[in-house]
Length: 273
Image (cartoon, rainbow, N blue to C red; front, side, top):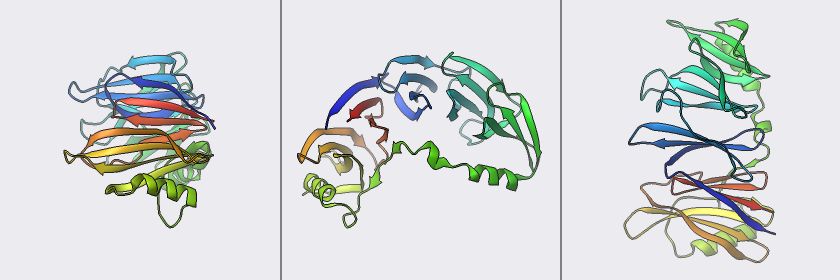
């Protein structure tokens, strides 16, 4: 069993979102909350080599990502600041680092079989359409039957997209194997934990974290990677030292790569083999 820290990514801005493309490119959304600016970065997940860095749209803050599909990032704007409604679709090609197409006629719903399902808001109803995912050209006019659109959306097998991912489980003392239980119990013995203890079991690696209160009354996110064969901690770290409340989902895995968010501004990537 071997643990290899591949790289650390940081621009010293708050990391808002992490997404992986089909070709294992890591898209990192960052936000400067004081200046109200959003930045987008793309690096090779295995190596950290940049594809593009610090990309910004014409709207600097009230923007976001709908999804990543076949190496295209689909951005959106918001109908109003601080409101959840989305408007505008911008299809940004990762490999060429340019916008392929954009439209302000529709809002994004989902993508299926190379079609972008979109809607146009009317006074009390929505009109539904599909667009070509590469060009944005209109393919289908689907009318106003929202129920049929929901049937298509619900038929998409989400598990296929995520079958090579591992996300943390909540530790439940009565349900776990003796090895998992003993390692977590030993590392939390005598500590008053806050919120759930989370873990990922990958081969003989146990990755887990928990929150405790520090001397300042803040929450500290303790993080461990343990070799179960040797019952030894390989990594013993703090992911967040001054949290006001319990925050889940500090890490995840794709294949044998472990992505860890640290102090809100860093991504550390480990290879477990």
